[in-house]
Image (tube, rainbow, N blue to C red; front, side, top):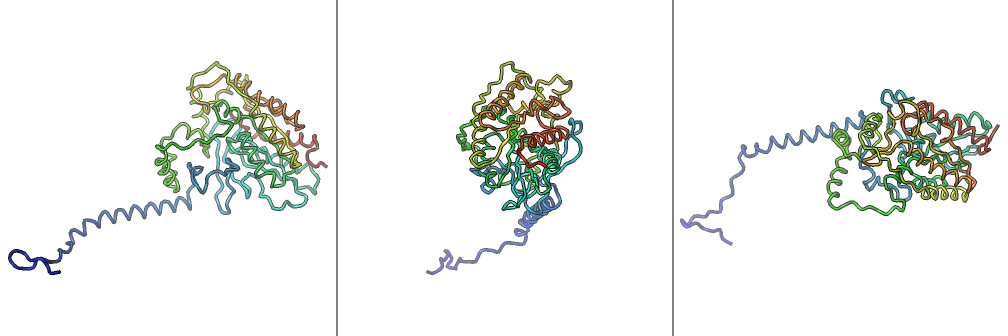
Length: 408
């Protein structure tokens, strides 16, 4: 096809003018700036990952590769070789606590020695299952209940027996989490004994209206895009640091366990909420049913099991105790008198005692053994160094007395 001709008869198909150097320069500045920002972000991220403290991913449970197992919804990750241990620290003045400590898991996702498979001859395995009162996040592993129990049992069992006590506690875990952990993992790790130390999280779950039938709760449509953006940004250490600096909702902050404790702030929140004199309603049947499931599972697999009741400082007459009680901030906009909370917790402890009698499960009644004092607990229910030591020693004596472990 011929080129079009202008009215003057001359061809008009001339090539467009090339961009001038000035037009090119207009893009160079922004491009260099953008590349500089990208390089700086990459360098910062690399430095944080190599030399900085590893901040946990706040949205890990929503991510496909990290989402909870359908079989064990709540669990700690197994510690990867070369990964840094967490350094935890109790705030100044926390009763019975001081200094910095190390928290890490082993090759099975528990605190304690790595486990070999198959189990070596002569090894006697004990698993202590529970929530944060078992986990002892702000103590070194050898100071925790499980660590003290291992030390005591090794000193009092035959030399040919190697006692290994695994700390299978995880903050927030409830009796149905213990059922999942025992049924889907522990029975395959060849335990010789399982100790279940529970109660407090079931109480809080019931008072917060937790659904024990576990119907799914879909994410609302309007929340999906913001959540996707947050999940993407928190893949990076830089994004996680920004997350922890920015204001967060009460729910996000309360579900987080910081490496340095912040109980004074939580106590202040509890004090700011109105006191309700309506008695908290607790239905111990749910809790008792889960304990029966644990007892039946253990019995069916030939594994001895022990229940341990949950102590607290609620209802204590010791001066200053309420200055460290914060746990009721997890319940919503109101709090109950601590005498009422003590009675509600004891109703679950009574359920454990009844199920123990029904199922032939020994019960170490720590609730009636440990004083309601800041000498042994640093807040509502968490054991301090002396409390964990006292509990571990007492539990070892109980297991030996009941002939549940080999004895010299």
